[in-house]
Length: 66
View 1 (cartoon, rainbow, N blue to C red):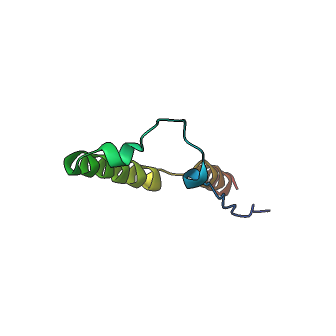
View 2: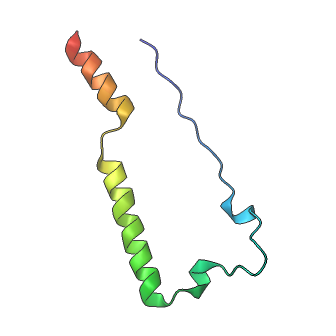
């Protein structure tokens, strides 16, 4: 059985040019809205981390089929 290697992608969001006149959204939010955004992101990350990965599910199926 062959396993694939983990791949890390480098995403440079901070170096992306912004359109002229665009204000960074984070700076436009007040503290309460920032807290709401962070809470929502934390929930999404936790949900994604708790979900079985497609690779893990396929591997588990193969193991049970043997």
